[in-house]
Length: 513
Image (tube, rainbow, N blue to C red):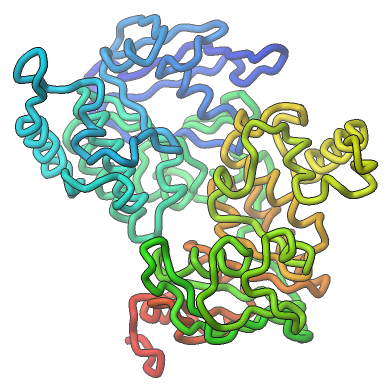
């Protein structure tokens, strides 16, 4: 709850952070009031996460001053930040998957009965108490590997609260959540604020800023542009401040006739890692010149379907054909050679080699082409020039293409993948969560790129948890539930209510009330 009489929770004064010659933060002033929910918004690569990493002690500022609750602090490392009441939940969680929730929360801050014995019962009681107080509802004894991404995020929040955080920094907190989990997280954030916690949210999602933030600071290319009261601006005004130009939220698509069937899936059965059927006799056809969107709640077989099509998971039975040719259980390389290219849902595990450079990642699938290799040696000059062209075209920041992919922001990592896959001239382009972690300007560009693929006659299979994205981009929409496509709809003839009804298991032969 906002407290205008208390000292500011955070003051960052003239903060500059340089990496060599690159200025990530340029004399930024950033103030957060005690008890408020403050959004820090900007394009991918604008410097949002860098600024918060400075606040949390992960980076030392090149120059500038930081005050916490009115006291000037030299935050040399995260331990000092934690001592001063700061907690940070990173976009990519830092949990030990084989440990339980309680074990992860107390790791490094264990409650001991004596010098040798952990007081697990007391630790568990504290974790359960925090979970109930803030409506986090986590299962304390569950292993991290067995709980959803949304629940893992809640564990990270409990970790910060357990260490005494009064100021919580959440880095892109909704990037990997389903719509339902996003709504639940917004309720949790508001409850934390009501309990007196100060919340800083790094984000570029305009609807969520409007739904929960009190104020919003906008950063563009390392510089502060403005701080606004969220109630006084609309989404279009926020978007324009963020990217420096008007952003069109609608997608212009010309009506066109579909061509021949490119992807033909019949009666597909695929098991998950537990050897349980996850895709259960699924049928699907995607044609030339269409975007076929799949809508569904996470966990209904989408991941297993994608892995089966791209050769990453064994198919038990059924058929997957590309241009009439069977590709079931072929190798990923053979499947790529048949014309299927993929924007994977997990960019770090499946889309990139993080320690490779941007330039190297952009040729992962065609490094052996004559343009880039003579069969013995790579042509580094050609690879570098190719990367510079794509970095410019797809606005990958920074433009230093020899930089390691792991050093990029999540959004810019995604741009590297999309640049590579689109330029491989696919017959079928699979786009799984293609705009996850991207700002509105980049989303606009990616959407146009997907529509352009469709207009060139290519088949596009889109899987997204963003219903707006599925409805705006798709020509036809297949609703997936319990491992099957339960209904296929014309995107122009349906709405969110009908899709939501079907996604929740509603009768496909009845209309939503």
